[in-house]
Length: 423
Image (cartoon, rainbow, N blue to C red; front, side):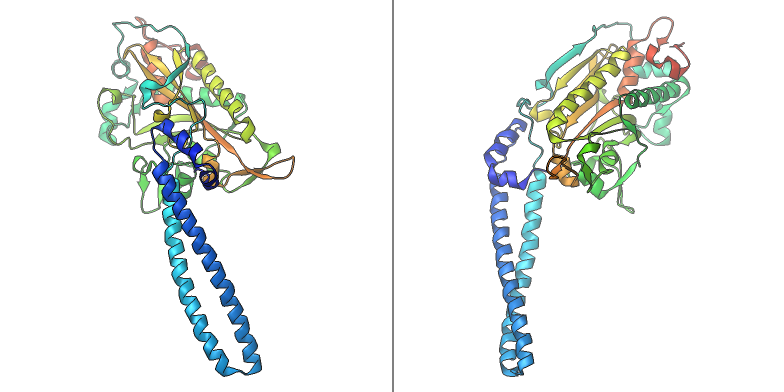
């Protein structure tokens, strides 16, 4: 959530920043500031009337003690009139606060100064590339390899649940489990504390990290219990510290977790969703950092280096992109995407997004820290990234390592799989 104070003090700065997202925020900011001014006026009127009402109540008390009943009756009439006016103002205040909040929550995060203006993914900047791209005309896509080697049963997944819910079998299931363990071990060795979070969260948690109200239609919602199935473990991990004041000495907080992720993916169709390319349920290992404002971009670079190391250890050709304003998520200030090369599909597959949200989430979460220098209470910066999302990693490993003898397993996974090749 953006700072109302910033919008009041420097609206042009916000208008210029949101223009990178192709958003003309001027009309909404003007409306917000008008409502804010009206709300402040109503609050002042209400406080004046309350002070006058309290003064009258005190006067009535004094008159009761003096036995001046005739004067009491006249003042009570005025008191009743004041209470009626106060009730009216309180109703107006509730309505305008709701309108003000609705507009404020509609603004996405302001992009970092390094983010370029752009409309979509075609305008993202390639920051880094690693590995040689190789195409093999005889390569099979992962859904055909899965059938050939009995690794993933898409048809039975459809029978049991529906499209987008694959069943991993045999060495496919073992490879999936090996990837999860490898990611977790690599993350914890880099100082991340492992957490096993809940897979369902309440509305406050979803609001705190920005999924609500922005992505309400993309989340699975259990109406009877008012719970949401998590689309990413970023939500429970970051919300662990919601409403808390952390001592500066305890920062940064570094967390990692494995979880299944659930996404409705409404509107997805076509060749880009075939096989493991886009699922309603998939596995992911997440990394989250909570940090001081001045140090958060150093931590963002640390996190992108960490993801790069994992992909290189797996031998996957990848590229890192800095997203343009039009392709960034609602809550992000700066996002780097990692994509791996699929030799059989001859296309790039996104496997990780690493983002700095600055104070956008922490303002919603009321997630703060106490400064050692002057005991000041400040908002933290929050960051998260995938390390890594499994489906497209699995797809790339299968497609890029196939050969006449079978599918070779990256050496980094041997101690987890117990086998070096799928024959």
